[in-house]
Length: 315
Image (cartoon, rainbow, N blue to C red):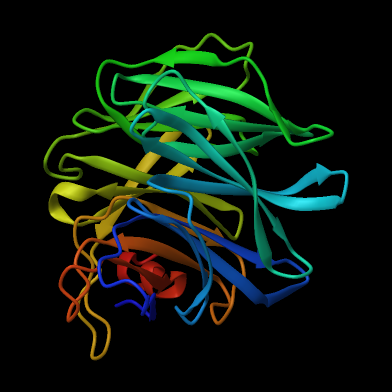
């Protein structure tokens, strides 16, 4: 069961898609969740589900972040989201200030293709944004803070066979996972000088994963890494233990109705936070929910205590 859900009182038709969690490592009670609205922009939520801030960026889809981004004003959290506005495709960038918990716009990077999925990664001191497309391409680009705004590097382009969406970077392992919606999950070397050859991690078999493959995220707990997948076709979440180049299937779970908060169906994006965050001492996972009962027409995000997921799977 979910422990928290987001509530937007100013819009009866939130078209949610993808969340991203952040907590202050020095004080995990200082935590927020970013959540996209595919019609209007980016919400910043408190960990009780209330709205902290709204940025009217247009139809942003997937969102991700990395801390420690150097700017002339000091280190910030780099937040970015794919945007598929007609005739204005690209990536919206933002800076989140850990001191004030305020988010500001940081520019827009136009793309000649329609972006769909999105994630952010880090290689040492280098920050990368990754855009996936319905055409099956992956575009990996560096981003640095210039004198007047972000500077985006030339893309490294990777290719799969059909429509993509969710992706996640494992910074520690220097790997990139990409979801091919009707096929499965693939892993790439995240090194821009790497071969670009994909490795199959999990297949849409309609037993463990039912198409579409949507959001992907990585949870780290006690030295163990877990890959969590959104199996949108049956509203479940397969979990794999990452063991070097191997991935061991551990089981899957669903989010069911609780006494106050409803269950979750047809998840697009999800995000796992490893370690203490807000009221969750061992971590949490946030999920998009396509129907928020009893508010038909409004989608939202649910947050689940990682301890409850571990108990369900016997981890």
